[in-house]
Length: 256
Image (cartoon, rainbow, N blue to C red; front, side, top):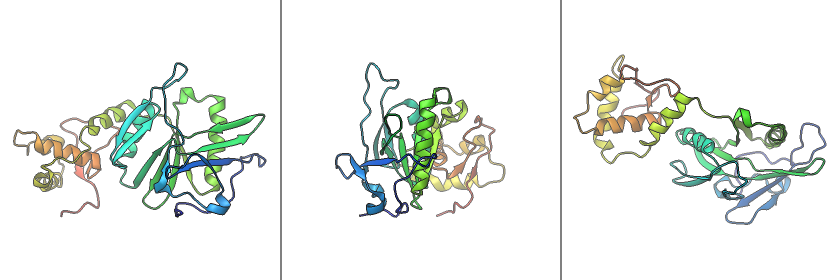
């Protein structure tokens, strides 16, 4: 079964026009296999498995992280806390329907054989695919920049997007860590969501106004934070939040 996530095109070449890049995937439990785009088209995105599992070692720069993804309804195995920061951001994006860690390997021959495994792949609800490398700016040495450029060209050639995630601002990171604790829908949400939305639709509503509706149990507050995590309630994720911060229902959200 082939995904419609991309066009069927020959394997890409790097910017110099002479570098042939080979793709490798693990599909539906198979071992890593070379991928012939011309013959096979795109791999089935819903069947992609990681090409490797992160492991810690004495020489490793990172500490592996196991994170639960609400998008996947399962865990993803990550190589660093920086990757976890990105997953927290991606997990809130309702356009993303699947996240795959260590999703593929690219190889090519320069002066000597080179290979690169990007950190993440995301599949969107319109079948668009984005491949992610995660690297802080201060850690982007010449070797990474070359691999990143080749990966970008390779993705462009098959109709995929490519992004380098360098990290979050401190305020956004702390806000996402806070919201992470409210990503699961509370059992009592059916009883209180309408009250939260009605209050948030009032003109110039603040967090203080919304929380004033809580009966002291904290249940309404928990539902409100869950709706912020889902993006149903709108807050600036990169700005500090205070009780006087304005909060509103996202445009396009309708009452049930």
